[in-house]
Length: 436
Image (cartoon, rainbow, N blue to C red; front, side):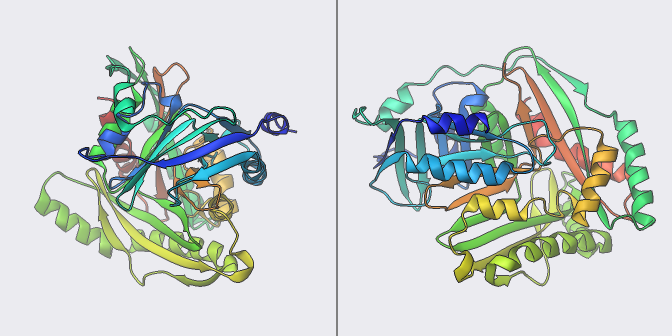
């Protein structure tokens, strides 16, 4: 029995109340949402925002921790049991209202890190032009929820991160390139078709990071990405693993990348080259095929575009495809976390074939990815939710002053190790800039 299971067995009933939030005269944009966080601690910030909609939470009313091969199924069981201990009063009834668990799960079943679902004590959300506040308290606590004005007044001063020092991760850049060369040789020998190789680096700050500054910069610079924070995992991912919204399922697949030059004309030419690149198109096809193959057993219909589009981000450009599906009658009750478990890991973050690529990763990356490239997002009591893939991110240490940054690249037979290193540097840039 896990620690979370033993905690849930004695869990008192919780009162969950969602009320409409009066935002007249206030522009509750992403920066304003993030600035509602009362403190600076990244571990206490729970965020999921994109294009001005999403959720921001803080405090901890309940926590589920799992690990190992059954981390997803155990979390689903414990989440459903937790919801049975809740008395819910939801006056808004939109996806993201009522009880919400923010989740971050490890990439590998063998990871030593914890996978978590955290229910904040306070969550503020906005969607479809409406805003709300959800509070989770003891049944006896009938105090009125705070107003927006009270929330805005109850925040600590921002703090600057001070000086920063970068330390190498599991492998130096030279050693990582050497491992990529070995992986390319294995792919050419027929061991796999594609392998995603990741690398890490450590950043040490002279003062603890402020979650509001980090998240605010990411949301500002990458508005088309999903800015997230769960239990100290902070980032802005361009890739949506799965969204479940009233029975409809959608996903955004990314594979195939080129860096930006900073010159608009040159970048247009680069985008054209990416869209014609046989290596990148093949890599993207692997990723889309992997996702649709995983969805098909649960869907009555699955739709994927014939060709990807080029997604322009400030630092890189990706080949992207939006895939949609409708759950069939037998699987209509599958919740967002169950779907994420079936889709993870995709070829976009692992490789093809999946099991073979995972073995190659374990041998050549020489590190534990922990929650990097795993599902991150939120789930509601009704089963709706959104889980992205934890990319362009960092895991913040418990004291807030040390962060572990990650980046990964899809390796194919035609890959160039030096170009892959450059791509990884471009993918580290969002977090490096957010820490500047």
